[in-house]
Amino acid sequence: MTHAAEAPGHRAAVPENALVLATRPLRAEAQLEETSRYGDDVWTLTPAWLRADRKPHRLDFTQVPHAHRDTAKLLFYALLIEDTPPGEEPITISSIRAYFTCVRHFLGWAQSRRLPLAQLTGEDLDAYHVELTALRLSVSAVYRQRRAVRMLWAYRSCLADHLGQDPLRRARWQAWARANPRWYDENLTDRIPEHIMGPLLS
Image (tube, rainbow, N blue to C red; front, side, top):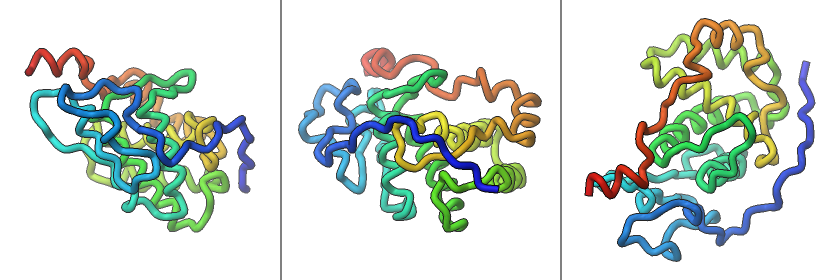
C-alpha cells in the first residue's frame, strides 16, 4: 500500500544564482562571489573547508539520477545553509560530502523503482534496509547510510519530493535502532568546529 505524503509548506524555489556557501565561513583567500551557485551542476565546497590541508570537496549532481536531482539539490542546499528542522543538528562540510555519497546511493536505488520518493512504500524502505544490512560496510558507514535516508523525511519541509513516512516507524528500522543506540547519539561530525580548527592548524 502506498502511503500518501503530507504536504508541508515548502519553501519557494531556490534562485539559480543563490550562493550555496553564503552562510558558511570561508578560507581567507576565498571570494564568496566566486563560489558555487545553486544552478551549477557541481558545487565546490573546498572554499569552506577550513582545515590546513586543501583536500578537494565537491558535490557532483550529474551523478544523481535526473528524476531526483532537484530533490538532492534542495536537500544539500538546506544542509549547507543550515536550514535545520527540529530534531536535526547542523553538520560540517566533510560530513555533508560523506552524506552526499549516501543520498546518491539511495536515490539511485529509488530510481530503479521508477517511483517518486513520496510513493515509496514501507515495504520498499524495508527492502533497502535489507540491502544495506547485506553490504560489508564499517559501523560508521552503516549509520551514515541509514541517517542519510532519514534526511529525506526529516527535511521534508525543504523538499518538493520526499519520503512519505519516517523510516524509523517501520518495525525493521526500529529494531535496528533499539539494538544500535548510536543511531540517536552518535556524533559522526568533526569533534571541533571547522571554523575553530582551521585557524589553529594554519
